[in-house]
Length: 375
Image (cartoon, rainbow, N blue to C red):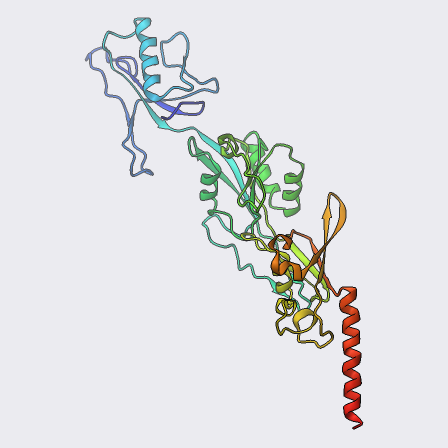
């Protein structure tokens, strides 16, 4: 049941008081009827409009003090107003009292989207990534919109805010939604924020410095605990900002015997070290014993034994950590397939044994070729 709160508009009709009876004709005018033309399903409401104050009260005429209605349903508020008039004998016994809800209270929030989705759910422009021959990515300019959204009570949640600003986050967005609590207090500050948020650098700065941030993950990785999200986490109030951040920086880098480059990390599924090597042109079949190319999967004959050692350079709490992975072991043990994280640097190289064996076999191959030439 809908519970009343500050900002609700109630329609109140009290017989002979709202409106007062005509002195000469002794007739009681009928209550006014309100019909919202924007809502086809609206059945209309009755009474004169009264807004519930910030204290959660309404003050109909002739009553010496206001009536507290916050937390009450509409029928309960009607009963409280009827009792207030009856206790002071301001109405005759059995006088008609009608209370209806003309309009629900509303909450003003701002939705910032950097996923390239416009307010109508259509892309702002074509967002294509261009790969240079070296594997580097040319990114288009970061897109972003800042939209003021007005949400009715009982619809003031994250999902309704997204629905009014273009729908669910696209694949260009990070797998989380940030909510900056109480960023502005009134319409003037809201308009200032809207102008400020047009600058991507300022958007990132505001998100980084604001202390009251609620994070709602859109995806949970393997082994991660299920987050505890409460009802209050998804509810929005005046002054909140919903921030959908771009994931353009979620990339990994390759080098060594792999083709050097920068590659995007998929958002909606996990990428392990085998997938990263394959994405950057490495030959997994050769490592498994199949007929693959040489280093980097480019058909090179530089080595008969393929490289099997991968070094993943990762920054953990400000320090660089080198994680060593044996590609042969990953073929039989799934636990060895570590997941790639943003800004990882993946280096493929030979083990010392593979270097020595390749040198011996290459020298033997050259010797046999020379012998064949001088026969």
